[in-house]
Image (cartoon, rainbow, N blue to C red):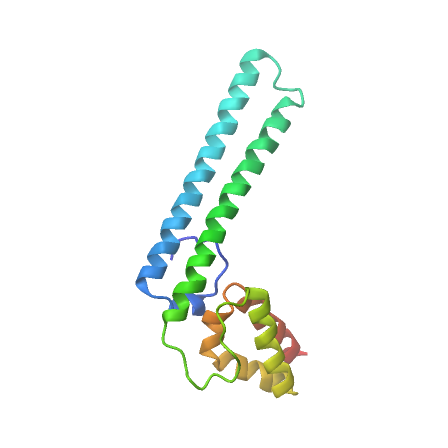
Length: 162
């Protein structure tokens, strides 16, 4: 699989996505990659311009680069937020287990969803190893938590390993 860094999903999360959703992620990643390429070109163009004018060694280049980086980061964040919004609402159409033990409310923010899932697991399972095993078996959490899945997975993994 090519490098996808516009969002941080686990392999398990990608595995449950539809072909359409993966294609959309690839499109957004390509847009981000094009922005990175344009950023490099813009920086090179500014460097050449400043060298030509004899002021490259001044702090002007750092200022120009900071402005370009800021604009790039804003554009990437816009792409990322749009992709996460798309995934947030396209995932709810996927078939979910009716016996999910916690509320699957896609109107919640990802932070609220994380709190719901974490509260369920921490009140239901007192043993960290049992909690981690149950969490690993939860296929709903893969979709429901989005990028937060990996952090909760790692938290429960470390907790179970101690």
